[in-house]
Image (cartoon, rainbow over all chains, first blue to last red; front, side, top):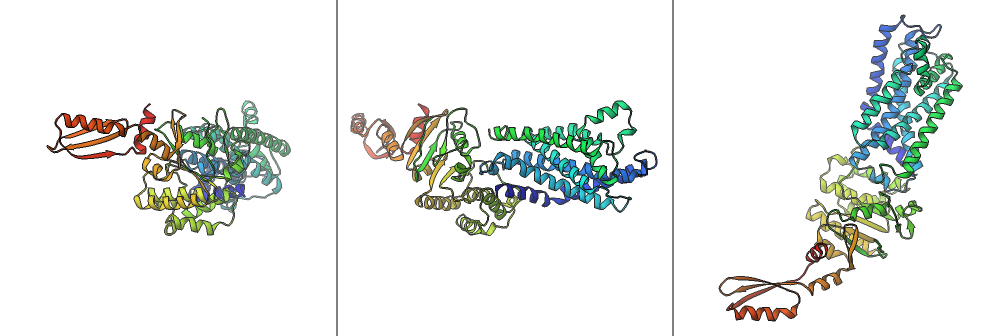
Length: 250
Length: 263
C-alpha cells in the first residue's frame, strides 16, 4: 500500500504537468526527426534495406524513454529535497526498497509514455515494422528502469539544482547522444566504435532497434545482459545509499 | 540525554535556538540518525522497528513545507496511503472540519495562506490517528483564531489519550498546556520537572516588586523570596519613601526559562 501510494503520487505528479513532461519531449523528438531526417536521408549508411529516417525513429523513441525516465525520478527527488516536502515520505513507514522501486516504477511509466507518444507521432512519417516486439519492450522497460535508477542516484547525491543539471548535461546527455541514436556504430572509425562499446546507453538503443529491424550492431541477448548488469549495479548503489539515509536522513 | 515521556502526557520541550529540540525530534521521527544511543516510540525502536515506531508517531514539522502539485484532500489521502490506510475520507473530513479546512479541501496547496498551510501540516500528522503527536512550533505565524482552534483540538486529542510533545518559543502556550517540561541547552537537558514545580521552584527564589511612591517615583525591588519583602519595604520607608502602590510580579515560565538557560 505504501509503495503503491508513492508510485501513484509520482505518476500524478507528472500527469498533472503533462504538457511539460510528455508533450514537450515528444515535440523535441519530432524536431530531431524533421531536421536530421531531412539533412541526412540518403547520406548515411545504416542497416541494409533500411532508410535513414526509419532507422532514426527507434533511436529517438529510446532516447526519449531514457531521458524522461531520468528526468522524472531525479527532478522529483531534488524538488522534494529542496522544498522539504520529502519529509512526508521519510516520516512514513516506507522501507528504503519501497522508496526506490516506487520512484523507478514511476520513471519507467513516464519514459514509456513519452516513448509511446514519440512513436505514435512519428510512425506516420516513416516505414516502420515491429519485427521483434518482445525485445523492444524488454529494452524499453529495462532501459527506463536503469535511467530511473540513475535519476534516483542523482537525486540522492545532489543537494542543489545545478548539481543535478551538471549530472544531466555532462553525463546523461553525452552518453545518450553518443549511443548511436543518429548513426550506426559500424559507420564510425574503429577507435570510436570501441569507445561506443563502453557506453551502456549504446546497448539499450541498439537492442531496442533490434525489436524493429531484427538487425543490430550487437546481439540483443548480449545487449540485454549488459543493460541488466548496469541496472543491478546502479540499483545496488541506490539501495545502499537509501538504507544508510545518505543526504536524506541527516 | 536520557528522557522518558509517559503515555498520555502533554510534554513541553523548550530551549533556545540550536539547543537540539528539533534534532531530538528528528532522531525520534527517523529523520536523522543518532551517532549513538537509541530512541523508541511506544516500545518500538525507531531504527530496528521503524515501521511500528512511525505508525505510532505523527509529526508536525517546523518548516512550512508542502507539495505544490496537489490539493488539500489529495495531500491528506496520499499521506494516509503512505501509512497503509486506503479509505480514510471519514477521518480526513473530521480532521479538516476541526482545523477549519473543509472549505479549502479542493484548493491547491500553492494557493493557501501560511496559516492554512500550517493547518494542513497538522492534519497530515493526524491522518493515521497516531497515539503520539509531536508538534514542532505548531503556532509559528498562525493567527489567533487558528491558534485557539488548534489548541482546543490538541487538548481534546490529549484528553482522548494521545501523548503530545510540544516545542514552542511561545512559553505562555507551554505553561498553559504542558504538564511537564524539559529545558534543553546545547544538546543537554538542563531542567526536567512538572510545570508547577518549575514555576514554584523559581518563583520562590526570585520575585520582582514594583513600588510606586506618593511623590510618583518608582522603585524596583529584586528579592530572593517573600521573606525579604518586608525588610526591603522597611528600608524604603526609612529612606523617606511613602509607599502608594506595590505590584508583585509572579515568576512565569519565560522568566524560569531565561534563568535556567542563562546559567
